[in-house]
Length: 86
Image (cartoon, rainbow, N blue to C red):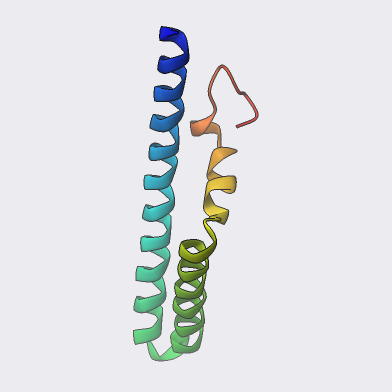
């Protein structure tokens, strides 16, 4: 039974770690879009990136699906010995 609890605790810690990475990626992309929107040469691309990220965050909040989690789960730094594929 202790192994079961420990396994659930590890899984929750991994999900929390991935969620922090997803939030960081979203924040960095929104920041990049905002900076690009302020520059005259890239203002259109900056607006598009910012709007896209804002819409994706609203979609994630309403649906419970976050595309970043699927991407980040497969990154080499997030692989575990138990689950080498992510």
